[in-house]
Length: 219
Length: 232
View 1 (cartoon, rainbow over the protein chains, first blue to last red):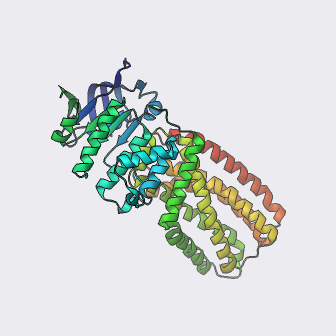
View 2: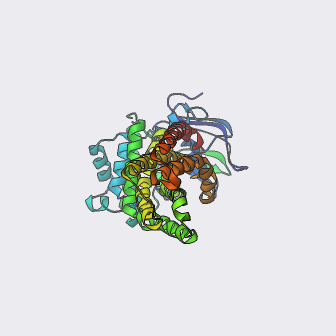
View 3: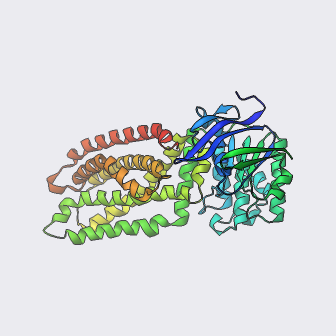
């Protein structure tokens, strides 16, 4: 049973990718307002854990609750409150950054002001906003994707290597945005190999080993 | 946190606008798919240029060219979602699947209409068929209604196959049998529009009614089924 102050509750969760158990009897509780760092070796199950929380992979066994919604029966309701930034940025590469932001603004009903504010927060200045995503650097694409996450106003942010491809200023900006998001009530789960960087940001650390979860407690 | 607005119509409008803008920007439709359709029409003309056969089979050739081209257009409309995994972003956002389906369908209808304008003009030149004003009205109606059926099935099966392995080969296997009734009805109605084999305009309108039924069924069914079929 999930309590109101829990953002994520997994109990003996099993996720199969084909016949391979990418998550094996994983149990985890992330409280609202936390910044949880997920660490682990490549293939340990970090991305699968994030995708489970985003409702993108089905639960084979066990229980999973996100923001009070049971993923087995209320996946779409949970998804409306979840933002995922994975390895890919989820952008339309033939559109400009501005057009990508406007598209998401139209989808979620964000105002022009909100769109402009999110672009400013991520350092997307006028010239960059008019640039086609295909012509952007990896870091610029990441900033645009994060600006979309701000527009989405998600309650649970799931980030897979969010600092990848960003310069020092961009990394600092992301850290600030994540801290602001949590102080505004959002919960952040970050999967990262950059333990020093992400560890300084996180309020607790969780390690995934062979699809199972090992707690390391508060930072 | 503010509740997200995911009303079906606003999502549909955003998706359709975005898809058409991407096509306008990338010019893939004009620079690659239209020439492909043109080449298919010319090859038909070379293969069947004998004793007036072309005029008799022109309606079927036009719709076959439309169907073959529509496979590329449908694949393209979901390839733009897969390029940077935007489809996952849409799923995670809890966006109305019916809105995504309707938006994709509307964008496909617009693109297919553009195709058909060019293909019909080509058929007038290459196959030397005759088109009266009454025939033109019938043909425009047929094109619009047939496109709704093709676009609805294309959006449904395109979405279904978008995350599947071998989606390039899966789509024709799924889509072509499903739109066969549309092909038959559109071809018969176009025979009347072109006056092929003594067919009159009056004989074409019952096929138009059948196309309207297909369009309504496919559109309604697709709106209901899209979310369920693309869930995983």
